[in-house]
Image (cartoon, rainbow, N blue to C red):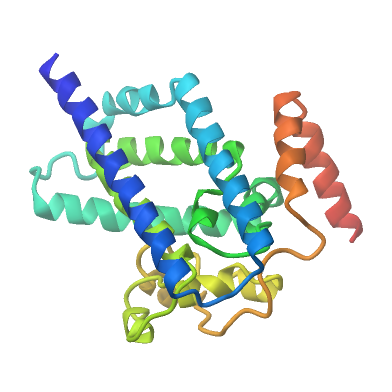
Length: 271
């Protein structure tokens, strides 16, 4: 019972940190915006993205997704790090490997059409701001949960370690979506994914947005040759607008996911 309340308290604390960090990023990008979209477009983006986040959060909770992590814990004793004593070294390795896993997952969502059909919801935002980091299709989030559950079993780490690590990664995601620039950004970019690096990832051009897949560290992109340091031509996706988000949600709710994916793949083959 004590461990349960401890887990609840940890969840509440992480949620509070998330909300406070989000508010801080919003204030920052209003005070020092790099891109200057119209106010109408920005309000539409904020409203759509926050609604999407709340819908996803509630739906995943109703599906009892958190319980998957505790099921995975039963297999964590056999993972690659299971014999390593809990401590800073194990936590650091876990964080690095989780970030690398998220890099690979992100790369995959761009290069497999059946995954891109969901991930393009994130890229369909016509402006780039901190709330874009909340804009994901629930289908992609569900698959990402399965990736993290597999990570727990393979590496042999506790779900609460993954929860804390994922929260830190999420804060970095909010940070690099924030519409700001700051002195020394190009130097920090040698280690971390900063807003300047992530802007090009949201370019309308595929040759530009198929780059900078990292969530926290930029050295994964440097190592795998996917780093791009230029400014984007424009933000969003050509031929795709915000209604794409609404259309996909209606499709999922009507149990037509397979049909939607097939139609998308057919259109892309004909293009």
